[in-house]
Image (cartoon, rainbow, N blue to C red; front, side, top):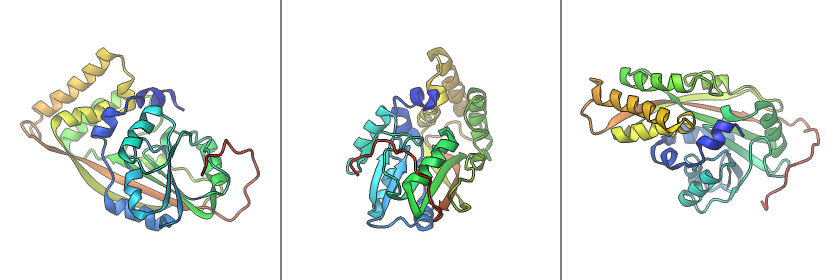
Length: 266
């Protein structure tokens, strides 16, 4: 795991409380593009606190969550207790080869070692199966929102992605899979100003800052919310996102045999 992800997501309270979910239209697109349906085996990889996992439950698939961070798994278990959860990473998925119909990856692919994760996805996904990626990308079209994320630009200068407006830079083609289908949607997250502060606090690169630096960043966010003419005095603000979706099918080519990581009871 990336060190910042391991440390920054260890306490998921802010993540669960203030991170956005995903709009139904995006979830429906992914389900249709990948064939999520009853009795199909679906793995939500790097499931976090289950923001996306919970949205998949309504399709009544054979659903499994894989998440490496213990704190995240605990929060997921509380939020989606009926979904089986196993510890594992994208680079060592704890499942047998060709055992999965669909893998979903929400807000996480940019953290992975893409070459190793791609090989693992090619190993566990059956020919004809599919992988889907989804991101809530930061929409900076409003001046006050741009000011908030401008604070984050400084904090995240060493983050493992180029920028939050171009997630497709992370969704690189994968060997053994067909070209991506893509779709884009938009939604807004209504939040009280204090919850916007928690939203920023949930970012891993903020969570791992020394406490004094962390509080300085959060105070800057509070200052924007208290003084910017577009939002000052409001009890609820609406934080906009662009939702980027990608899906690709597993080809029928043979997968070179390689040792599998320890199998789950699945």
